[in-house]
Amino acid sequence: MRIAILSNGNGNYSTKRLVEEAKKRGHEVRVIKYRDCYASIERNNPTVSYRGEDLSGYDAIIPRIASYMTRYGSAIVRQLEMQGVYTVSSSIAITRSRDKLRSLQLLAKAGVGIPKTVVSRNSTDIDSLIEKIGGTPVVIKLARGTHGNGVVLAESKKAAKSVLQAFYLTNEDGTNILLQEYIEESAGMDIRALVVGGRVVASMKRQSLDDDFRSNLHKGGEGTVVKLTEEETKMAVKAAKAMGLNVAGVDMMRSERGPLILEVNASPGFGIEKVTGRDVASKIIEYVELNAKRGSKKDKVGA
Ligand SMILES: Nc1ncnc2c1ncn2[C@@H]1O[C@H](COP(=O)(O)OP(=O)(O)O)[C@@H](O)[C@H]1O
Ligand SMILES: [Mg+2]
Image (cartoon, rainbow, N blue to C red; front, side, top):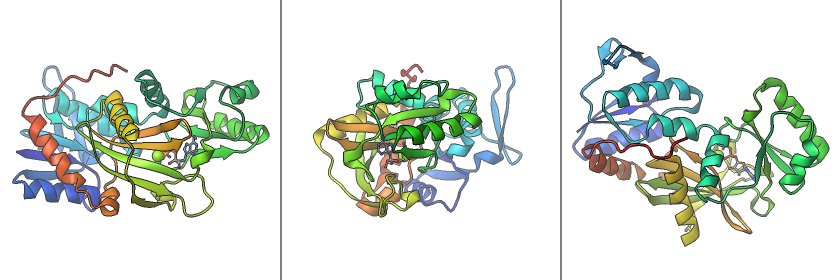
């Protein structure tokens, strides 16, 4: 097969691993820097060019779109979808996963456990918003934050008010600001489950090594192997499905009332391979082999 990996970083570990596994399995593979692609929108003739060359003839693409380039990257993916090229992650699923509010709405609707969350356009009635999610401390997060940036813990109502007021200043549209119940019993620890084609292929626990309540590896968290319970496995699979993602990094917390999903990542890093010894890249290539030929299924999530 001819496979294109849409990624801006050739040297990136995940991209390297995908290239390596695709070659090992006999495919012709190329890394396309999507930031250097342009789309030409014409009646009945959607094309994508890459550094002056027409990009066509690929059997499948594997998008690895960075969160800060979501709109541009997913537009390129959409253009290729319109040509009928198979993509392991659809453009709409990538876009929805980058918005925590939209994701939580879909997850909740699908019956996936999530922390209590509220969204509000203004900060006038903060007291009742805080009551709604069970009082302080509360987590305040930006719907489009990533790597733990834009996630704040407010210990008191007073602190919550100041943080919200500051956030509202730069976010006229309140949909970017979420107030969330603080999962205290699991503070500083979360679980990443990597789901490929409806199966968990690797899972790890991430632990913050200092007093930070955020366990992101980008914030100095450390990953170790963890065995998921049956409920956690089911929840991870359900979450990926609710988002319409064939490849997903599902983040969850172990709470007193069971697993609660925080977010679902559309381009999860493969650092989890090093932690768990599991071969995630080859699972993805195998999935592409099986599904590219069948043609893309329509995204049924709907939002
Ligand atoms: N409601 C919460 N209760 C306790 N800890 C949380 C909560 N939400 C997030 N965290 C911690 O903060 C980290 C980052 O939050 P997350 O929602 O995944 O945002 P990001 O996209 O920045 O990774 C999580 O991995 C978790 O350790
Ligand atoms: Mg996260």
